[in-house]
Image 1: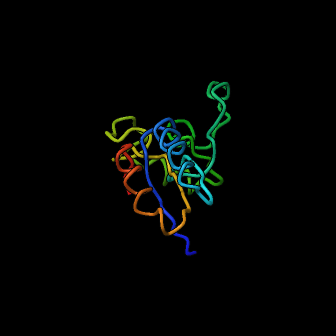
Image 2 (image 1 turned 90 degrees about the vertical axis):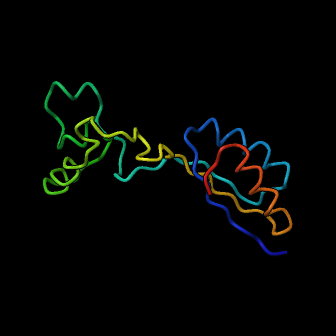
Length: 122
């Protein structure tokens, strides 16, 4: 049998986990739930804010792991660095949770329908 893959975006891990339980009934071949960001890394430890042990404003406001000065300057120009952007953590759509699913071709359309009903964006 052929396999089909699906990439769906959600606003919270709980939304994605909710639909993942329903998808398991379709005999999913593989599935993962991941948070993504336009910047790599986990950011800085809040305790380091006062010690000055951080490379860029983006390290503090966007959980970016900045590796050099030029990247830090560029990332700090993002509207999210000022706290005045309107997209929240996930950007303009607020969808920063990625559900990746591999299903059998025979259940592909049913899986798509379940994801859309759960609020996922395909």
